[in-house]
Amino acid sequence: MKDRLSTILKLVISVGLMAYLLYRFLSDPQDRAVLLTTLTTADFRYLLVAAGLFIIAVASNGVKWHILLKAQGIPVPLRAVVGYTFVGAFFNNFLPANVGGDVMRGYGLARYTARSAEAAVSVVVDRIIGLLAFMFTAVAAALVAVAVIPTQPGAGDALADNLAQVEMVALVGMAAIVAVFAVLLSHRLRRLVGRLFHLRFLHPLAPLYQRISDAFGAYRYQYTALLLAFAVGVATV
Image (tube, rainbow, N blue to C red; front, side, top):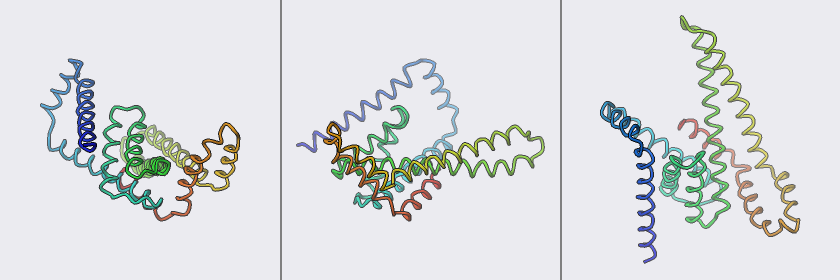
């Protein structure tokens, strides 16, 4: 009975969200006209290719997350992880800053494993690896573009300068993300922060902090898993 009610509730929520999305994007007559024009003039072969690539990208992100979960010692089937990743991608379409999708997939994993701290940390690490992969791809693309564009006739220097700036910003971003990740994995720093929880008003949160700290610590020497997840992230981008 409980499972049936849960299924019905999920169905109602899903239908409600779809109705909300349709209302949000189709309530304006001008938006409806634009959508109708787009659908009647679009080449559906390209739409199918785009949809296929999107599905592959989301599934690939699920594989990346699964690699990180295995490194943390959380036994979750790949199929379930990919499913939670699709749920997160769905919620990212209308919740702000893509954070809503991360919250939903982390919540789903926490319910599945009953390990909320580890689930939350795995989502954070997955997001960090994804950002690093995105920055790395931006740097690589800028390097190629800067090398190719000046050799093309008629190409101005302004575009090459802009690409060089993009490359610099991406490099700085990568360095900052790596530094933050290194800090999160640092046992010494986490131990220093843990001393704050000896204070009376923070002491009730000490067990939760310890679980989060241990969850980050599980990645400290998982170099192969982190590199593999990074490679999957680059391939996905």
